[in-house]
Image 1 (tube, rainbow, N blue to C red):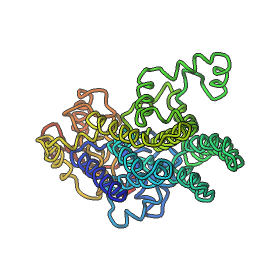
Image 2: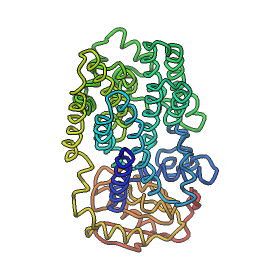
Image 3: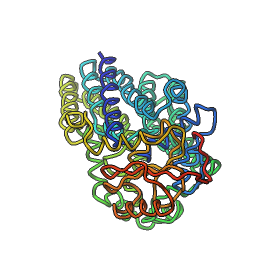
Image 4: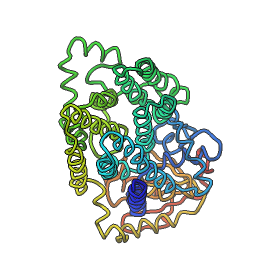
Length: 472
């Protein structure tokens, strides 16, 4: 039964992702970044993403290990030997996210019985943090739920070696996963027989996050302060520490500024009907949540729309299960645990219309409209194997057969350019600026090879771009 739940979830996730890809709703930032990186791994090279390096002024040879410490992406490289295309990542993500339901089911069955376990596993597959992750391209976050679920289930089973291995795997997902491991270490400090390992996890997790962000990422060409987002509290970590000591109210206020942070936290706790608050396991998520909610920059971090909540969603579900178990043992009543699980599933079902999964019910999404057909024709007008600057929403559909740069506010002088002037796209400020860029390219000698419904394909022969035309 649980295999069927996970299998159906994987299929639904894949359909959602591939449908968005076909409808030109994927983006260069971030699907093309990961596509180029994993393709590089598949060619036994460092994970170079030329689209990231050029747009962010790191250079065309920039390795994404200088952006985020995510060497676990190398595990996906063999898939590109079978099908070299960004859609491979979308399907892989679907499978990884769905697979986490299995160890979560085992964890719940051991605590609350098989009936509740199936309901909780189904609720996880429908939960908004997972669905929103599926809907926003591909990210390293796809690995976090499965590894976290394995870690917690093996801990529950008393198996130390798999727990350590799962924790090490998490450290390969992203530089701040050390905070999640450290949070788990705090939980273990209160567990008899696990305190030594808890101390090692707490200290080691924090040390690793420092090592990855301050040493490893700069070693691969990044900057240690690139994602510093706490200017409202201090210009660096010592500054934030001083603020915390001298004005703790300012730190607490930052947790709710802007108020959407509190909405995200409420929705996150809502997936377990607040039962997660009854378990010390919730402590595991606190350092990672604090990292996001104390930020004053990068607003994507604290809204429900993106993939960041996937890093803690399994922790919240497991904490809810553990909280209900504790309450049941304290009261000596067990029949209502299944009712709680049914309520959790009902919350997940009710939330579906408000998040991306509802897009599957839109029949119009299964056929291309006029502009989408024009987008497909524009993509088809670009030859294979060339260097092309592409609009953010068209770049993923070109990345499987061309070397893609982001069409942005700086001319890169690639031989081919695919522009979108039908609506504002990242990173332009408005459509007028996009139209001006197209006119400037024509004035610089580019020829219009295709123009329809706001999409324009331009070409300039004899181009001398310094970027390599080879596949990244």
